[in-house]
Length: 522
Image (cartoon, rainbow, N blue to C red; front, side, top):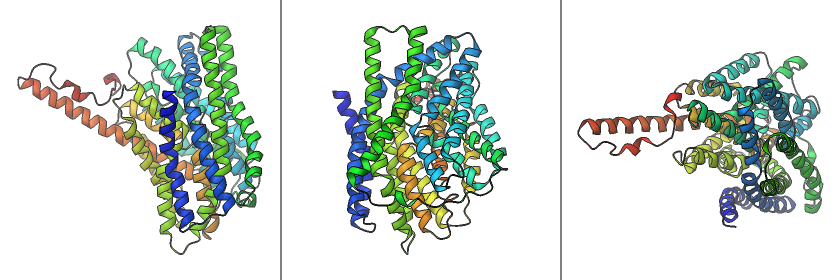
């Protein structure tokens, strides 16, 4: 019960700031209708309960399965088997990801079916499956992360030159939305299982624990861009559906969403459950007690995810649209920009996958990379992302590519100057920062603002926010890695200088242990 209590306190501290911001806006400059306010408050309670149970269940269920499958694949001698398993797993865990279906539904409704729900989910899942497979092979073959990301984003850049702004915005949004609450913990555990065995074989450090999520998410971008070129669609036109902003009866609002979201959450877990059953039959041979523990963890993960998704979808999306429209309709743009910054600073702290990633960072590095510091960098990065998205709506000539081209270009360049551990962490963080909270509340806020500003385009400007959210954490954590690396080098030089001046051997050598990075990988 102690661990569950700690999770609850952590989640409470993450969700309450968002609730406080909305309440302050309601009481001051952006009053909400009573049904929407009550729906939001109930949604906040469900998010707190759901996220607490979800994170508790992940540790008992999803992580052991991912580590076990990773161990098995690392010991496999046949690449054909590894490629087949990774392609199938990658496709189905992406296809069942609730975040992806949320975004695909929004794209379908806003574009009036020009880019349909099913086709988007399929092409994104194919891209995820292919790139996740390449990411697993990268770990097994020992290919450096920076080379992998340079190749992937170089191809994305070439495809972007021939794509329309609408598809570029949707493609980069898809990369963030598809790495959600279920996908991220499983991929992190999968990479961890393989990297632990490879570390024993090759003496490598912790870097290979991270990077798989970032590589896989690039597949979503490639899938949408290639589809856009094949379809040859020039401009996607759309409007904000009226039903998303209409006040609704509280009971009807939540009851209408419960069954679809419960079904979606079950389907998101189903590929992993099937994979575990198959591996248990042919590989794991876990004892009864172990199976019961994992099953209990999966049940907790499921119910936690259902509560979380119902809370976010029932209480957050409509409120986000209303607040965005209300602030964008004011005479001054300052409130919109300020609230955008505050929402970004706080919503990322309530993302389930952010908690999973930062906990694993601290665990893998033995506490050398401080979790709280990583959260601060992520929070500032996402706050800046939502601010830049709102600014893009207000300034018609500010295009999405003006952010993404220099931003991702800088991210790839920085990858050649920071330790591989931080490169993997950074690109993974780009995916985890844009989870269900961002895909619903923050995106709805930006779309509401875009619908209210006459010069804004709902498709080109309303989408693209998740793309920016997926970009800035990469740069932020790479800069954090550069700071750690510089500090480590400075401490090492100080130690060497101290030894040369007659200090006892080993004095203050722990100063150079700020981050446990493998010297072979730098």
